[in-house]
Every structure is written in C-alpha cells, then in structure tokens.
Length: 141
Image (cartoon, rainbow, N blue to C red; front, top):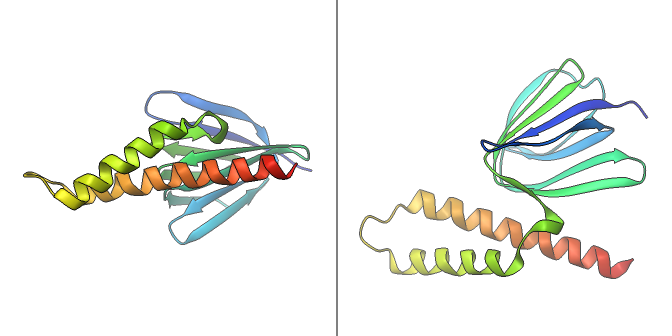
C-alpha cells in the first residue's frame, strides 16, 4: 500500500515522524481517514482517538486532546494540544483528573472557568475511554 509522511507535533516535542499507510483522526465534523495522496486539507481536531496504521500489521492508538490536521503534498501534520500513546496512559492519574474536574464542576469555586473545566472533563473522559478500548482489545487476543 502507498505511504505518506506523518508528523505528530505537540508544543513540547515531535512525538512521531514516519511513513505510514493511513491515519484516522477525530475531526470537528466526525472521524476522518487519510490515505496517501489525500487532497489538501486543514481541519480542527477534537478530543478523541487517533489511529495510525504504519503497515498492514502495525497500528498505533493515541489519545489526542485537540489541535489541527494539515494534509498537503503527501504529508500529514497533526499539531496537537496534547497526545499520548494509549498504552502509556496512567489510568489512576486519569481517574483522579476526572474526579477533580467533576468536583470543580459540582462546587463551582470563586473564579471558576466553566469552559476550561469542560475541556478538562472531555480530555479525562477521552483518556479513560481509550484505555478501556485498548484493555478490551488486549483481552480478546
């Protein structure tokens, strides 16, 4: 299968830069698949599951918190607010983050930023959902 270059970049690092066969990203209007020679595109990314198929036998799953995808010249660049490999997510830390934000949403302390709290809630829920998906997938094999 034909390949294209994928770069996944966060404010802290270039997390991934390799030739891949396909990616599936959570776009603002739903999940979007990209193959080699895709038409030029720029689109926002929302929190969700980022799937990278390196070849017919290797698939990587990541939790992405949002950002942008640019596709042009047989290259895709994901500019992510934050992204982490699903198998590297600390489940206990993600659960604690979810509990913290749920408490803040319930208590609404002085200076409470509702939009920021909701973004934190979506990130925490996404990380836990992706962990569950990966764990279930491992049990089936």
